[in-house]
Image (cartoon, rainbow, N blue to C red):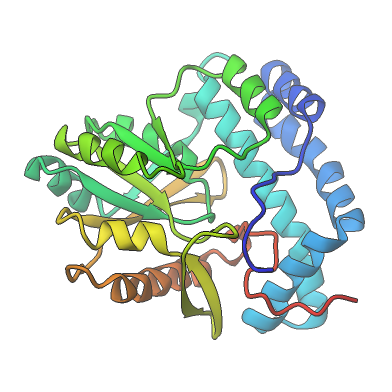
Length: 298
């Protein structure tokens, strides 16, 4: 099945070890340990290996051996983004947050959102490290309140532990509910000139989906973000925060052309923007499941 099951890998003990290393020896020491963790994933997580290998081999058309190498690099890069997120959000070690640098591409788009005082919708994807976006807004002094629309299916023990070692996030969460009450929360937030953020690339069984070609193959996407965004009459911006070398991050923001009540056109534009990012950062696609529903079980 191409939908995500809402489960993430990892254990609380594993996160505690990385937090200890970051606190005592810094980010680079945690990166060294990450080689061993990425190697374990590469050797033993057969299901996610097949999924990410398919992405490199079939969708990006890499050779067999290059695709194998990229599977390991993908796990390692994903681990780096988690380490970075913990380091930045917790402000670990004196001046740790200041060791990261930020670059802005599309800053005027975000400033325009603020000036219009209508709120806005951000749509991102499970690429890069969007969860540190709030720190970008702080760097450029944009007084936005971000509301992340999400499900509550993450591993609660890991989530609770990370909250205990991190500074209180400024991002608020709007939990998707079966009674659709989250729609009222979204409208209330927009009325206060706040931002609503969706990820547009994972859907769950039983929810409405839309299909579109991504990297040359049809895939399913959650209908909700595109239905809502195309009906709200507020600006819609595609936003990605991508990891660069040497503790550097690059934020991309592009305003979408939204036709009222045309969610399919918005999805098509979103897919093009995701493809553009993936061609620049092929290692930062972090959907480790059968996204295209095209993997033959062995």
